[in-house]
Length: 177
Image (cartoon, rainbow, N blue to C red; front, side, top):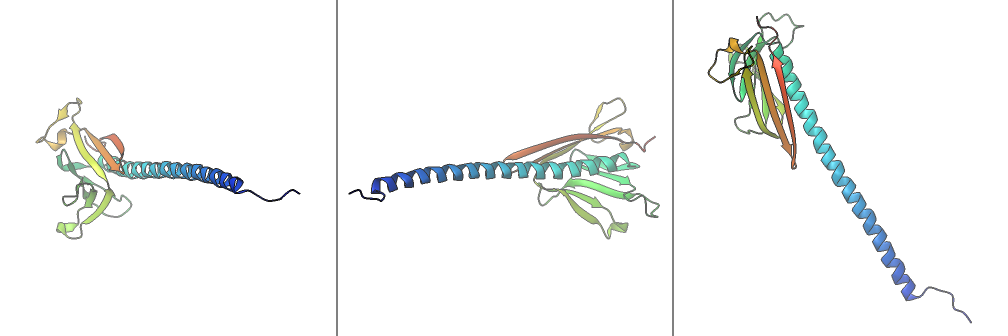
């Protein structure tokens, strides 16, 4: 007479094999999730940095004058919205937030100091620096005459969750004689 059924040894072996398979599946899922999170941070940093750099470059190129400039702040006079009937250019500043140096701000100055509009350009800023060059490509060091500036170099480094994203760009001032 033969007995039909499963022995305790067979059950134990099938449980061990199931645990190994489930462990491999979990490990594969965890690694994939970690890679996805790293890619998400990279995309977020690159989008934020590119948006900030492109806006700065566009406005610096269109600037009619530099009001103030040093290695970590620039204030320019630029027509922010050429479609409106505003005759005078607006004053725009780019600088790190004094209370939180990991935030890059853009300030559009209001009439007589009232109604200033301050917006966040980038968060998680590791460093933000500006260099100025003249028409001979010589580096200018503050203090300098603002009408000597022909090129502004922008360096922006963002860091989040151990990932770093560096951007460098330059803007030739087009509206200057």
